[in-house]
Length: 154
Ligand SMILES: [Zn+2]
Image (cartoon, rainbow, N blue to C red; front, side, top):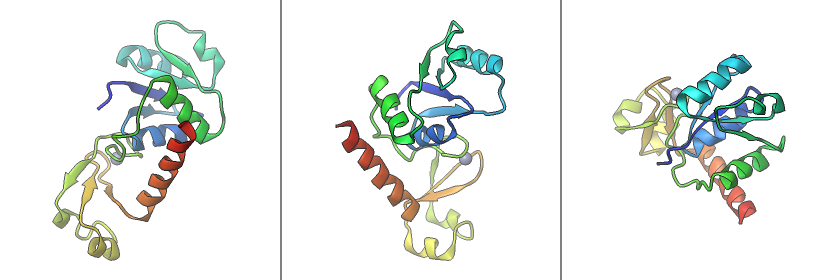
């Protein structure tokens, strides 16, 4: 598990979601003011990911200017910049950033669509927002996208 933690600015919600999918602790609070974001990055030792050059002029915290508007390039830049790998993927809730917990199949009963319950064996639960996750088609699509990204890096 990597120690690096991120704070994504209001323009980078999709990047934040993907960093969470990769297992990285990433806050995304579009309602924060610039000052609040800087304060949070300082307090919690988070790297601020931003497309706002104004924020980069402030001191006392680590920041990375995200160059591209294209998600794949943004992700590739962050991974490259910090030498990260995507080997802890699908451990964190993409919606609220909490670490997912493995739960017995019986707990998913009535909480996921019947077809999913019948066809999946392992489930994970977000302790914060109570969403269930499983390795269905959505997971497979994300996996494929990650693999594409891996090739792009290589
Ligand atoms: Zn959640």
